[in-house]
View (cartoon, rainbow, N blue to C red):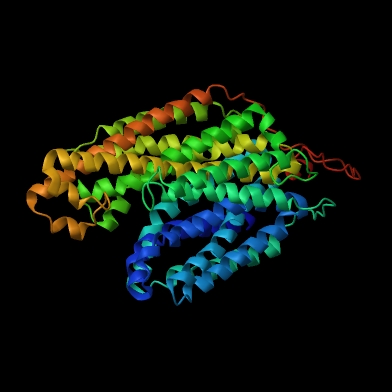
Length: 507
């Protein structure tokens, strides 16, 4: 029942990040505010990233269950308010509340699994959570479109309420963890500086090249603010009794390596899943719904390999092979995707995506497992939140940097193949919706199709080069034995659980 409730919580957090896209045209049609459209997604992502480390630290200090239940309540409150929004400004604000709760959902799920299950057996449970992520990635757009068409866009938020209520009731009734009460004070200064630093980084990746030029004063100012905030954060964290992000956890080489690998995995994963549907719709002629279904080979590959990797890790206690194989498969998969052009069939692209998905399956939860096995139990929350945060930031940077490469390549190709008039079509954006594409003259449409294929080639080729770094880093991960479930203590043995041993080891 606990795992079932945690699956629902993870589904809520991931699904809500994917479900909004298909409803956005309808939302803009009713609420207006087209100029602020991107903030509906940005507000959620920003609040999630900024709050993740804080939720992890609160769980370590005051107990996992109460903090997790609080995050669920905040998420459901934000969902209800988002469904009732009467303006674009209200919707953006309520989405930020949702994002605050979502940050606690994601880190809470992983930290609670870390509390309940010893690392030796944790792989299979985290493999299940990777499966939930895969379901959310493909089901989000489909569910969003269906609810918007039949019940109205507000139901993409209201659907969270019954699911969240089930998770809330189940966690309250069946999850039993030791209560904690820390005597230390919350590191408010560190939390504020970290929030400012993360916010600056996310806004740079969101606005750079879109709202503002990369060399503009706004982007440079945000960069300076981010650097100064993070430098001040590092200074503060070395001098407080209860740092919101204890820097000593990064002294463990394994932890530092896997958080870096997680960053690169997020960079490649979110970058590829952003531009694959665009390639499928523009070059291969798929509909918006079909482009979601065409991602199935990648998501099924990720799901199956995640489950297999979890089982193998549980049965053997060995895990180093998976980051290595995963890094190599992602590199090969991205290179194969970079070979796609206007003649590539859906079957071929499906095979390429399956290779990429298998690589992701090797890495998604293995990196979290190694990160949790590299910290003491008292740091389980901040260890889980750090791994989650770096993957989230990797995704933000991946979409921004690969998006800039894609846009420049599309514009250059349009100029080369169609001249100045064709290039003017993409002067505001390198992405055209299918309806606008059909209205273009055949020569311009052909030029745009080739331009998108060329842009996708650049995205996936650079993704392959970046993946090589992750594959090399995986070789240096040390296979530290996973802590396994210990034998039950004899009757009358009241020995206290070891600080470094998971709770399940001492039951």
